[in-house]
Amino acid sequence: MLSVLALTSVVLLGIASQCTAISVYTNWEKHVQVGSDVRLSCSFFSWHWTSAEVTFSWSYRPDGAKESVSIFHYTNGAPYIATKGPFRDRLEFVGNPNRRDGSIMIRNVDYNDNGTFTCDAKNPPDIMGHPSNVRLLVFEKVPVQAGVITGAIIGVVLGLLILVVAIYYLMRFLVARRVFSLSMRHGKKGKGKEGSQQRQKPKVPLVFISF
Amino acid sequence: MLLLLVGIVILHIAALVLLFVSTIVSAWVVNPASSSDLWINCNTLNGVTKCDTANTGVWIQAVQALMILSIIFSILSLFLFFCQLFTLKKGGRFFLTGAFQILASLFVMCGAIIYTVMNSNWVHPSLFYGYSYILAWVAFPLAFISGLIYVILRKRE
Image (cartoon, rainbow over all chains, first blue to last red; front, top):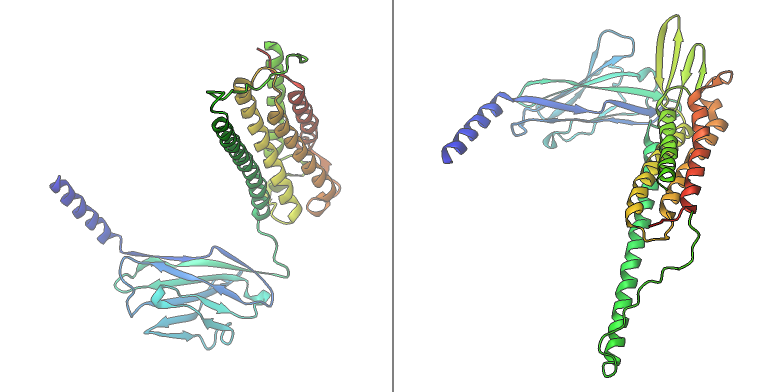
């Protein structure tokens, strides 16, 4: 038994030491209204503790362009915004590297900002991983996401149904308990004359139209 | 008596099948070049089919929700019918089953009405209504009649 446990733990450690790839997470898409601010969040999962040399790197590829430009880099505990990039005065670092959060905020988005943002995070010695992309879509008026209202309507109706059923059973339980306690009191009062209480059977109507 | 039971169950299942087909098949509005339904808008030009998900608009999502709810309620009503068949005392009425089935028919009616009134928002107005739309309208009276029959029905032996 102990040997099996030891073997399992050795195998797991062996697997874990191979899985030192870092996983970077961002949104899939971001829908924003023109003129508003958008927060592009980026976080990562790593098997190692967050080191002081953690780096975050954001790059941007406009819709239709082939090349991507680097717009932001965080390293050695300090954020650096590209001074000649398209977001030089609109970008702000709002992340918390100690909490594995490398999010940036872009203010006052415009239709020219449509494109793909790529976040690459590295946590030495964990440097092997894939960057993650988030697509920014700028609208004049943000359309309702597919399925939100559908799910809401279905959820509300089914919830109401469950609520009604629960209330019905609760009322039945309370009424039955009240009837029981009343009959107990009745039984105690008439203990001299009636030994046991009379049980009332529900009366089925004798006459009914059969279909 | 058994024949009546089988007939009622067949009617219920027929309404349910119509609801399923109407919700799933993409043929609410058709013309020779395109078809659209609750979930997707497809256009075929020169043999190439291009589809967009129908995610614009609040009303199409309401229609989606109402159709799905009607299917759920119809299935629940079928399940309740078999439950009540064995647990109801003699002379009892299938109120609950009938109520669920009538609710399902009302949901289909609301969905079809909303689709009829608001469909100019997401389809070209010159298209014809496809068979899924017609099936939805046929499913409404079938389900309603089925629900009424359950309400009138009384349990024997």
